Amino acid sequence: MTAHTASVSLDDAARVVRRVNAERVLLLGWGRAILMQLAHPLVAAGVDDHSRFHRERYGGLHRLRRTLDAMLALTFETPDAPRAALRINATHDRVQGTLREGTPAFPAGTPYSAHDPELLRWVHATLLDSFLLTYQRFVAPLTPEEEDIYCFGAHVMESVLGAPEGYFPRSRAEVDAYLQEMLASGTIYVTDTARRLSKQILWPDAPLPLRPGGMVTRLVTIGTLPPAIRDGYGLRWTERDERALRLLGWGTRHALPLVPAQLRLWTVARQARPVGASRPVTG
Image 1 (cartoon, rainbow, N blue to C red):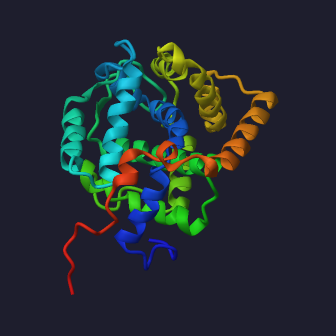
Image 2 (image 1 turned 180 degrees about the horizontal axis):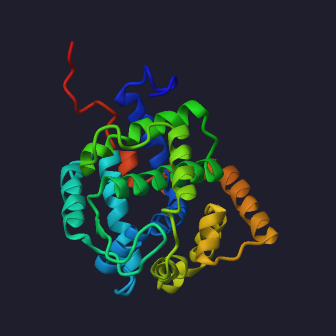
């Protein structure tokens, strides 16, 4: 716990988490988070062996919808939240196997499980990092205190996912330190499997009306990846791309305040009852 979160209640933290996760524009960060997750060889193996998103038509969109629905249900404590948690863990029950493609850190045959706390921590940290980055680039700045509170508020996912208490980072500094440690350790290694799966994220099979949006998300995904991971995927990034990304961020931040809430925020976010309203008052 940091000085910023020492006196923060879970309700106060939940309000910051809700403010960030309410924004539809956070979708721009999903591709980055997924490619970072797939850069862990055991995560990539689990997705390749057990997910149908790369085998079904529009599978990536369907998987994103399911994941997004679960995140929103848990964030805004909808009646579906308990079922969403059960569905996540039931899916994780099925995701286990062995690595076929060896890497410097993991020889072929290394077992994996979606319940592995190390993998849960990697996935969780990539989401925190991606959502905070996306919010600040495309919505509004956050103070260091707000970043810490966001990370602290999100740690409740430990109990939802069955991770050990204290396993998930609780501050921006802890997220940064953990990501740097993972990148420096050799654990993160983009495999051929990850590169193949990344094509479904960067160039998804999407209906024609959605394809222009794919160009935008591809620009954001590639441009915001850590350089080491971007290079691992063999993705090209130029100064011209960087200027386009900066212009996109500037334009979105200035235009978003003019967008009606019905378009800007998720429906469940607009309809959610206030934090703590459903809880009994204790003296």
